[in-house]
View (cartoon, rainbow, N blue to C red):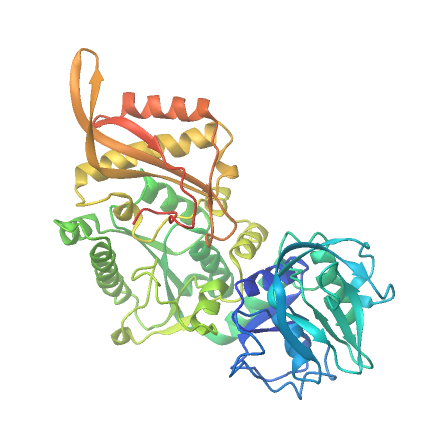
Length: 509
């Protein structure tokens, strides 16, 4: 078992960020809701209590049993976590005179504190709390303050228990990464052995033990998650992995052929299935976006089930589930109420009677790419922008027709190829074209036209949870707009989407 840091989640919006920062330090960690503390095994080197939208002063505040943790393992309370360690162990927490939110300057009170080793006095930290610690228990000592917060950090005497009322995980805290590094390395004594190579070695060994000589079916999407999952399984079980790549007719221009070729060059046992007509038939006359997703999901399952029956004695279904999906399903807040009704593979019906294997369920998206790079994955797949499971169906607003799909494929190809030619593709997290359900007046030559409008969308992001619209050069936008209108029959106007997420979403449907 990998050494790990256990993060107990009280519902903070920043909890995933804590995990990401620790992973960046090559330290494995897991997030668990405070309501479901896992067994404290020997590989757990330390524990972090997250922030929370709750208050320790409310009538029924979150409460946990720390008897197996506090004083026995290194413990770090962040924001609410720090207030919890003060309030329930003899201190006092009260409402702040004013909400303490934003940047503050740290004044170190104990220059020998391990948590602040090599951290500069007056370093900028980020506060985000409405409560504040007014008094600490007798065996606690203040290790840092700010101008407005006397007890910005503390340590428990005789224990490696620490509390901080700011957020080291956010970028606004200038030396937050150093503080977290001090905790995991200097206090928890982690070795930092969580690397792509170590993950690959351990995962392949585990897969061999788990699967033996069983046959596994994997639905490929062309994206990085399913591709990396496929490579790990391929290295573990070879030809016993049966990959299925379905052409739903909603992929990008020539994508089915090019991606299928890439997979075959990777040595994968892969079968391409042309199911375009089935999907087009199911989508005929459907305009509602949720009904589109459900129709696509149903046909995909039907096609996948049909193809999987051709693999004799298949016992497992492999999925490219990644760690944010796992966190969402076991979160303090419960399963998301807004989970889309169709993912790349989605949930398959019980009648398929296949056990599930998920090689990537412990990885964040950026870690998946790092592992893929270590596996030698094709750059075109490794660096591919995220692409929605329902494909172009949710980029065509309103009813879908084969003609609209062909128009959008041509437009999308010009846009994406243009980004690559101008060295902009890697600067953009996701880009695509949207077929709008409106027509506009135009003039081409001496003729008046009444044709379709296309919206271009390009965003920057780290994980898709939030996103900013990309400030692409005007010269590029003018060039690609002109190229689209001149080369794609049926389009006479191009607009650029400058909405950020939130309040907008990355996709339009």
